[in-house]
Image 1 (cartoon, rainbow, N blue to C red):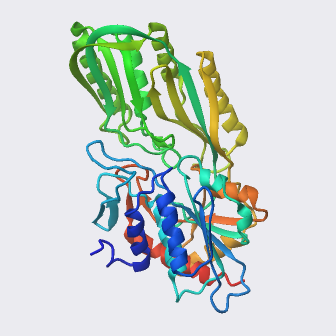
Image 2 (cartoon, rainbow, N blue to C red):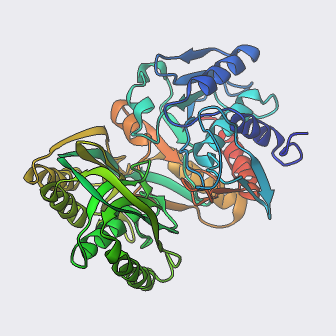
Image 3 (spheres, one colour):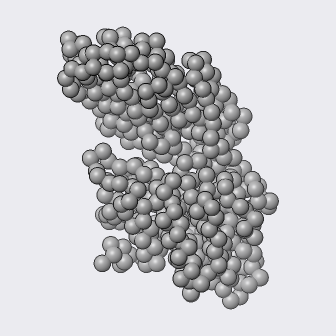
Length: 483
């Protein structure tokens, strides 16, 4: 028996469960893309699958809506792959193990992919429906959104006739998103030299952090394990001599790093000093992040003597300088929109290779010049230390549209259905809406979705009652878009 077959809306949860059985992490979307194509074939619906695996499925208008303007529904099929360290799960080949508890849907020890599998499920349920009135639909499923909106960036917008678009990639019911920040990934490559060394191997692990989405939760004062590790290694350099062998933290640039690990070579008699500093800084970090990251932990593990290639002292000093000066968190709040983060950055990936330190930082801003200035700051830091810097995956901001008949209609319908106002907001996280808005003249666009908590973490969970309410609202909106 399917786990979700008795939950409403049945078709939405049916398709969501099928999606969860298909591995669909960013960069691994061929299988789910083909699943969507097979769906279109089975339902005798016109479709396009491009070379990137983006898919568009077209559905004609229902009777009485033949003259209504076409509506685009859009979401992405890829998910962030994160898991608890103790969980054995291969995102390349394993489906998710779903868990229903207290009205929430989650996955056992991993991300759920509600961001944005729920958009795919809503889209398929609408395409499969036979009793829901709606205009002609163009349902767009893009790939690799989580790694830089790559699918949307490579999508041929001439495949779409509609100029009213509802994006289904937001995570807060009762909110209608109408603007978002632009962003870019900044890659720093800092060359390092290595020398032979002998000593006691010590593993340092910063863990126990909450993490979260670097756009949606960057303002919540959550710590970054990469930043804390940099502070610890810097302080340790003033306590005892050590040589840095390995350093790694984070797997996604748009996720606030939950864990960072380092391997050091030290003199045996210095172990007690390292342990003592770890206890002190753990206490200090927990005090600093009280209420947001109360369980920050610094683990010290001794593993015996070894010979290894470690960083040359000059290279180690450069690495410490970079770690202590790399920016993180909110850089500026908006001066025009209350409580909106305007500019931020997140060094989400940190990896020390044999001959270089690699750092990938997610840079976001709703102001283009501020985004460029922050990128230039990281570039200057990198090049000052003799490294190279490049950017990738740049995407534009989605600018607020003063005149939006679609937004106004959706606000009106929500008020009629629930007797309260729909919250219309601009957000700091990046959305594919910005790319479509930039490339499609006169596009009227909004974004909505059900409540999803702790996205991009192993604690991600989807509010099942919210899924039902959002479905009822979405179908009512489509019913009322007759002219």
